Image (cartoon, rainbow, N blue to C red; front, side):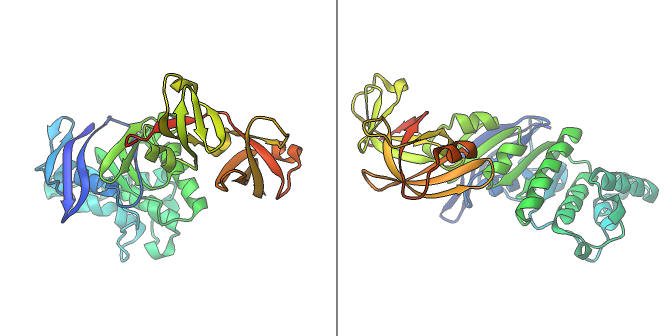
Length: 355
């Protein structure tokens, strides 16, 4: 099922939760709604599900206006952050619940319900837990059961609201990998809400980045990460260093540091900010007269394949974060307090529109 929202507006009193949002969610794709708390992503998910009504705008399911359809008529499966399992029911009965409460004319026989529930339990790799109760399960197991229950009624759309938000980091990583594999098997049009950029970039076919009720950017994960459309997107998707200054004929003069920005060779004296990710910086030992930003090593974390460096600029005292291969860091033989030269390999410039 394809999903489209057109010009969706939603307010809660004076708070604008959704501000003229229009998006398309292609059939069979897994889309991440990403953004900080309060940006509108969960509200949009609930509007699509029919759990929340928009003040204006339209929700289209397979091209048909679903705005006036009851949530039961939208054939949507919803998975919440906190599982929402029935504590007094076994795992089997939790999954079977949606099948058993269907109108009599549409209800399967108990034998067919049992077969379907056991197939779903096998799909989520928990068929050995059918007789357990939610209190006897781990957080990761509960979330898989919640997903199986949502899939039991054969939804045309699967909506997940921070599905792994209540789990620890290791379990989150395991489950998001498992969710991607499950989606590749089922190809149900799916939308999941998260504030975790790594999760969104790793799992989804497409990322929608939201801020203050608006869509900042949407596209494939690599497109959004490598070609951010705004300073907000750049800053939200990972760490970034900011170099404030002015661009003149292809050079950003940022407080004594001259950074090449060849894409802006025609720009004359414009106020701008250069954005550079930590892994886009080269670090060398200081040599008098050599090009680069002079900085002092304040702290280094050389654990794993990457060394994370905190550097303090000599000219203005601002901090720079750098990430370089651990082998390179070891070869430099740096210690805290050493002076280094920082050389950005790639600078993305955003201009100050008010200047």
